[in-house]
Length: 347
Image (cartoon, one colour):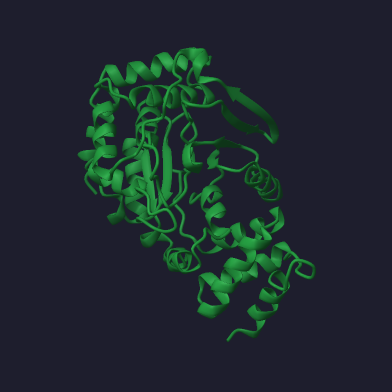
């Protein structure tokens, strides 16, 4: 048993009236000890559930994120020649189970206009056991799970899309996944996954969230780490996908100046029911149909999301122009061509 870890566990797990928050340095230390399995399984599980009950502070999340940056393998974008900086999307690792995702379509749109996109994630995992992004890409014809870091950098340079696969490139974090099933709840590390960026250089980060307090802690964490370029999305199932059936609540920080963006899909005739998820097969078929230029129930979501990001990331002067370009990228076969480029990419 780790006596050192036990003292940190006692601090956060001693009850409602006597527990205390960790300092940034203590949170880093605790996270490193869990990632490196220096703490015992009983200690790791106890820490996760205690911290889940207590709720982490922004300073604690910062320390956890520090540990992820110390141990997690990262790619470099120094070799990229694109005029537009890459962007990193942070989506929940446990996937989607209620609505069909459009993130892969959005990534294809952005890369088609020379905005490199970096995504990260792992396999099907608790607590949701939803459809993970890596499986969608596999079904679309590209298996990112087999890529080395050098392969990812090459793919990003040649196609504009890169995927960092957790089991391959951050096994220390992946080895903590079974604890989620055992405690039956997402631990604070689920928030870290949204804001961790597996890139050596500083690039804009886009992360999803569900509850407003989570966004507040994300903002605190970014402020403490000096991250000034980021976007928060109150998205479908905590993802970066904007919903059609409600107002989009977005936070945008540029050079450290935070502003709130509110978008009403009905103002653009794109409101409606978000396409329900019924099976992996159904979701992937819907995604493939949109990529092939077919008009489906998922198409309005693809246009809404693609249009927003094309505007938000500076390709289009306003949202209407972004929506028009998104529709054109679908109907003119440009995202289909981008997918074909990915499918024919040879390591």
